[in-house]
Length: 558
Image (cartoon, rainbow, N blue to C red; front, side, top):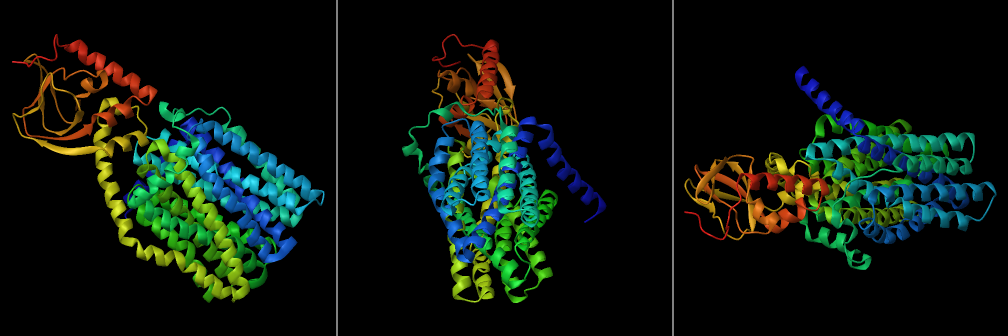
């Protein structure tokens, strides 16, 4: 790559971080996320060591299962509620809950209390924490206006996640060396409290239908239904299941590899997990420089494969230096998975059920992390540890090969969608809309060619759609008299839809035109669903009607 190419990539990467830092709402959302992730990783390591001390490898696997299965069952309910309540407030409630439960566990452990009480609070804490990611993931697109902005925000979020993957386990390792598991749980409470303080009072505009989406029961499985009907989402979720299965197994393997295979002792668990965080930071920086907004599905698949392949290599060549390097490579894969998955899901799923789809991701994560931990514990005790590493590690790479061509087709579809979004962004009335709303409009666009001299629609016709001009020009005629000339990037036909009246003018192509037809119900539902957009479109229509308002729109012009 030339020096100019490197400078361009560095400039684009820098813009990603600057954009997140300058937007106060994005900044608070990202910092709260960083705190929540740091608390989660610290909690996972400390609880794994506590369980290992109390009952060995089987206890680690069983505790992981007991944490994840109830949480996975509750995740769809919680995400359905999140789609009915203010999502920004839900973030603060989750962090406060995590703070209180972690503090309770610290007191019980310090007092030598019941293991059952510790595990019960751990299950409750994990159930609350599982809601954080889907809500945060559903809010972030609302603060973005283009796919590039969303990808950049997810790169920054991925970097913060990666830093927390390093800082959380490193904090746990330091506390385990110098103190006890109770001090580790207390640290989780402090970090969770700081996360709650950052997001307290955050307000993000959401569509007005947010608060009235039917009953929780009727909406419970909506995220699953939407995902099942989308071949693209099905592929992503299948590969996600493989990745989190490996992640769950790694919670057991990291203890066994550190203590039994490499002889690093209990602090080695935190060291290996911190290596994942270090690799994830490198992966996030790599994503900011090379991934961008193109071919995210292929990069996502590559990340899934990188979760498993290092375990296969470690099984063949076990050593301390190799283990640190391979665990760091897993971290690189984790960064690629996060950027690709969260950006693509936000673009493919409807905004009205976005939190529920992300809740489904957490449900899959909970079930397969728990299942992976049990599978790893069973394999480690029934076979050789190195064989167990090989078996689990092969799952992700094999599935990625199976779905490789489907991943490429997803990327091709997103490239075509980007062209539609670029056209929508040229229309002034769509400026206030966030990316999820634009994605909804882009999904309903239909290409249409209009020969020169042909009527696009006539004054007095019923309005069932509007038109975005991609190329060419047209005259707007009111009562047979010229009113205006419209061209590329302009919208026509919106007045009849927004005011629920017949067409107020005739539009006739003066040159050959390529237009995109947008269904009327979709258009009205989107632009009137957001307060800022509704105000802009209302002012736009008023301005147009000041220029010409037909006396009787039902009469044909001459």
